[in-house]
Image (cartoon, rainbow, N blue to C red; front, side, top):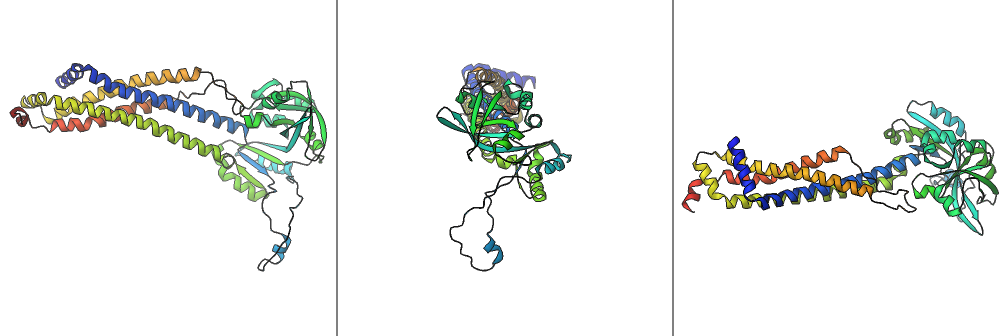
Length: 415
């Protein structure tokens, strides 16, 4: 074995340019694999975390847009019904007995927290211009338990909303559009024409533009007043579970039990999840292609090495080396190239990932980050080195197998 290793070492060092080129192919493939996977999974994890923290695991609401049969269709179900100029029913989004439903759901051991709320579209008056937005009437302390709102406050405290009946916690993007700071007052109007002046007691930032640019939080009683509804008026029930993976199966049970639309987080974020899966597929496809291309490079180099060393192989066999010994010589060469190239690739990949993580990035109004999120999970480095070594081992196996079957007599005769 020692002699076989010495011969493999001699072959590697006799033509250093070929060896370095083969190693660089693996190094480049592994380095780009690490950099791409770190960046793409980092972005996916970051956006998924933002989405999960800003949306409930299960959302219960009264879906007034669902199709309902008319009275004529209910009376004459098997006949032909002709309805002209049918108008939608004037139905509110109120969830009846919402507080009682919330209490019953809260007792379920799978449930981490429940927060009833009121959601309504409003217009923020900014001089002669009206900016559309959304106001949520909540119990701010319950909301904090579900979504960690306290950690997202950029100015003010969530307790200030409890202390102010006319208080408002506004998204950072919306506050910037209205040129408003904590302590300022803003006039808002409902689609029904009711106007109310509220005091901004805090500014939050979820990190998602679609939330920060439109959303505000107020007390439940405040939003009930704005909408001119009674104190039983609730439009939404948000639920957080101990295990988020239970949401898809638990949501239909709640819908059947209480008769309202119950939407789990996977259904609500289907577009985002599909995009995340597609990005992961593309990332791994490109990265694995780079490694396979590097493997073909090693295959070609070892093939040329065997062709150039036909006489050496013949002499080794004539001296008593078995075919498996010759195969082992070239397998050692490919494994050394693969291992050293993979280690260098991991170092370069880590360096590229570190540079990407430090590069400034402006997410604009879509996502609030100043640097690109990069995932330094060790499992990707393990996958990189294992895949790199396996690729080069497979690339070296075919040429080494060919070398082991060479007939020394034919080579020495010059045939």
